Each structure stands twice: as C-alpha cells, then as structure tokens.
Image 1 (tube, rainbow, N blue to C red):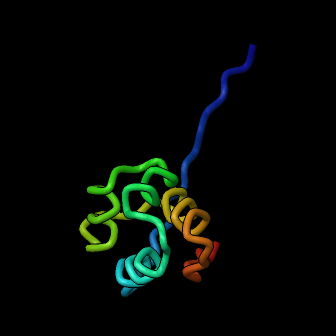
Image 2: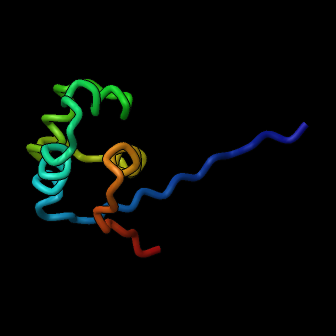
Length: 79
C-alpha cells in the first residue's frame, strides 16, 4: 500500500482595514453579535479579536464570515 505525503503552501495577503469592514458589516446586520458569531462557529471574543485585527485570519474563517454576513470583502489570493 502506498503512503501519502501532504505538501502545504501558505500564502499571506495584506488586507488593510478588513477588521473595520467586518465590523461595519456586522453592525449593519440585525442579528446580535452572539448570533452572528455562533452562525460562523466562533465565539464572540474571537469575533472581536478579528475586528480589532489582533490575529491572523485564516481564509476559511474569512469565507465563513462572508457567508454568514452575506458580503464579499474582495480578498483574493494571487496564485
């Protein structure tokens, strides 16, 4: 039986002001922060850290936030 080797490529892009954009989109949503964060499978505290740009935001989490808020923040990766 052949074993599999995984190879990972990490690409980082700068997205100035993304935290503020996420906050503005959240504040325009009628749902509470708790409800929005729950829909994105994260805690309210984690959501606040993202808005404050205090951590690196994985693409998967960004896409989930976009889905929950119904927005596209325009973050693209050049491959």
